[in-house]
Amino acid sequence: MARTDAKPRLPQAYLRLWLATGIDNFGTGAFTAAVPLLAVTVTHDPRLVSLVATAAYLPWLLLSLPAGSLADRHDRATLMWRAQAGQAALAGTAAVVVACGGLSLPVLVVTAFGLGAGEVVFGTAAQAIVPDLVAKPLLPRANGRLQAITTFADQFAGPPAGSLLFGLAAALPLGLDAVSFGLAAVLVATVPRRAGNIPARTGLKEGVAWLWRHRLLRILAILLGVNTFCGQLAYATLVLLATQVLHLDARGYGLLLTGAALGSVLGGLVGVRVVTRIGALPALLTALIVNAAAFAGIGLSPGAVVLGAFLALNGFVTTLWNVVTVGLRQQCVPSGLLGRVTSVYRLVGWGLIPAGTLTGGLVAHALGLRAPYLVAGAVRGIALVVVLPVLIRALRDSG
Image 1 (cartoon, rainbow, N blue to C red):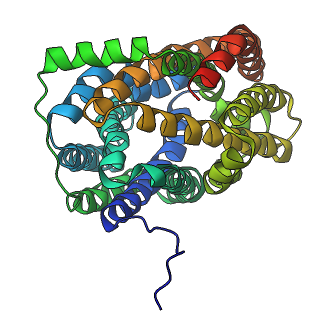
Image 2 (cartoon, rainbow, N blue to C red; image 1 turned 180 degrees about the horizontal axis):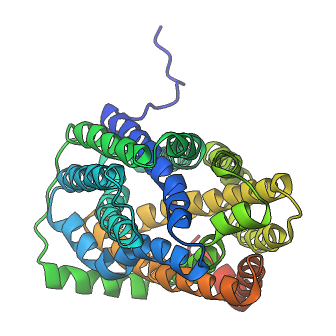
C-alpha cells in the first residue's frame, strides 16, 4: 500500500533555485571576506574602508523600487539569470584588473556597487518567485531551507575559501565569484517562466500603497530599517576590529566569519521549529532582544573566541527574524504585487544601510573600533522599547 502520511516534497523547480542560490552565495561569501582584506591593503582609515561597504549597499537605496516593478512586469527567472550573468562579467573583469596590479579603492568601490546592483535585481525577484514555485503550506520550509543554504554558503563555506584564496593571490576570490555567478545563472535559466504586464508607474504606486495600508508589514519594514542601519554601523569596520585590535591574520578573519555563520546556519535549519513551538510573536521579540544584547557583547569581547560566540548568537536570531518576516510577507501579499511590495519593503528596510556604513566608519574613527557595536546595541534597544507596544498589537490583530 502507498503511504499517505509522507511529508509533501518541495518541487524540482524550487530545488534548482535552492542549488543555484547556494552556488551563487558561495562565491559571494568568498568575495565578502576578501574585499575588506583587499581594502586594508590600500588603506587603514575606517572611513575609507566603510566606503566599500557603503557602495555595496547603496543600490538597495537607489534601485529597490525599479527592481520590484521589473519583478512583477517581467519573468522573474529571466531577470535573475541575466542579473547573475552581468555580475559574473563584472567580477571576472575585476579579477583581471587586480591580477594585473590595478588594485585601488576606486576599483573596489565600483565593483562592490555593480555587484550590489545585480543583487538587488536578483534578490527581489528571488523572494517574489518562491510562492510561484511552492504551495503556501510549504513556504516556511522552503524559506527556512533557502535561508540555511544562503547562510551556509555565504557565511560558513565562502569566507574561509575567500580568505584562503586571498592569501594565494588577491584576484582569486573575484575569479571564484565570477564562476559561481555563471554556474548559478545556468541553473536559474531552467526555472519555469512566469511573466507579468504591470505598467511601471502604476505598479510602484500600488506597491507603496499596499504596504502603507498593511500595519504589521509597515511596522516590520520600519523596524528592519533601524536594525539594518545599526547592523552596518557595527559591521562596516569588523575587519579592522579583528585585524588591528585582536591581531588576527587573513585566515583568522575568515575563520571568525565562519564561526559567526554557524549560528546563522543553525537558525535556518531549526528556525521553523522554533516559530512553530513558541509562535511568531515570541520568536520576533526574542530575536530583537538578543540582537541588541549581542552587539554590546561583540563590542566588549576580550578575544576572538568570545567575539565569534557573540557573532554566532547574533547570526542565529537574525536568521530567525528573517524566517518569520519573509514568510509573513509572502503569505500576506498577493502574488501579483509581491515583487513591488518586496521592493518597497526592502527600500524602507535596507535603504539606510549606506548611511549606517558611513556612520560606522565615522564612529570608529572618532571613538575607537569597539564603539560602533556599543552604539548599535544601544540604538536597537531603544528602538525596540519604542515600537514594542505597537508591534505586539499589530501581530495579534493579524492573527
